[in-house]
Image 1 (cartoon, rainbow, N blue to C red):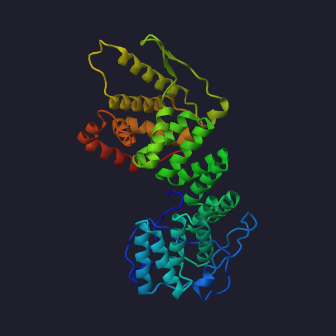
Image 2 (tube, rainbow, N blue to C red):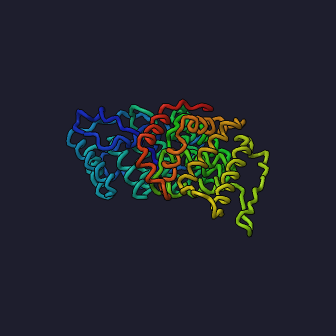
Image 3 (cartoon, rainbow, N blue to C red):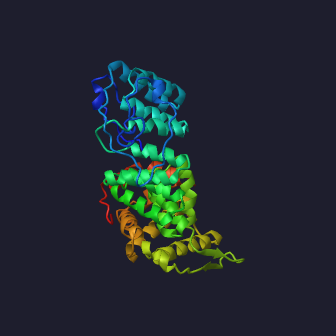
Length: 402
């Protein structure tokens, strides 16, 4: 699940206690929480039922104020075993490990954090919230990540207003961090507050352009708001970063729909109609992509005519058609210089520069990896160096419009 950020733990902090690096993308526990402010002496008290007052702008997560104990070598070993069980999706066994550690010392922030995380992944959101509210009282080093887990649990419990308040407080405390803004965008999208969700995830991407989930969320928000080409740009970037998996299989048809063009074929196979659709003024705040839309339609119309021609000496493979579409689309972005907001300043220069650098075919091969077509796998196999060159170029790209 992408919403619970799995950011690196500072394993150096635990190295002296015998913990090895099991997963460098686990969450770092940090702030919030205000429950259970008295000292606990037993695990039964630790997880006793406690009414949780609603969190809002006036009653939100406090700063951590407790200095908590370090793990002993034996406790560190059990935490490491719990992490391995969690990563194997054996959540109940992982939970039992963490509870065993906490029975010895209730204020071990690492164990509390991992317990809360395992509760969340096993969809026991109330327990995840309750344990998270306790562990967050401990002081830790590193960026403030615990509000994300607490906010996710609240959102899954249907308490979206409180989740939004938690994320907003996390942003106030760590404005340089992208993940609170991403999670805020997801919560706002779920609540139907699309303009606010768009603004939040755009800021998250300005802080971290390589976070795949943020591109996917922005693509969904753009699509829901009627931004066709901006949605295509966001989905294309997402699929470049995450070309396989369940999310890729969901995003790819949405990208294809956004790149379908305004083309219809009449009863005569060579009677092709291109419909010019005027973009509403309210949708031009992200950029005027009319020229790019027109070029997409022209390419699609050309494909239909070629397919209908029996005299064509050689028909392009489906992959060649996709690569051509990507190349023309990116070139149109470069030539039209769309003026406007985030999509025009952030995405358009990236894809224009990508095409100019000669990476359009490699991009097509990667973006359609979740549903390869004829000619695609062969091209990728024969052009591994070009695929690597795209990855290297993208890693070095200096993002603008942030």
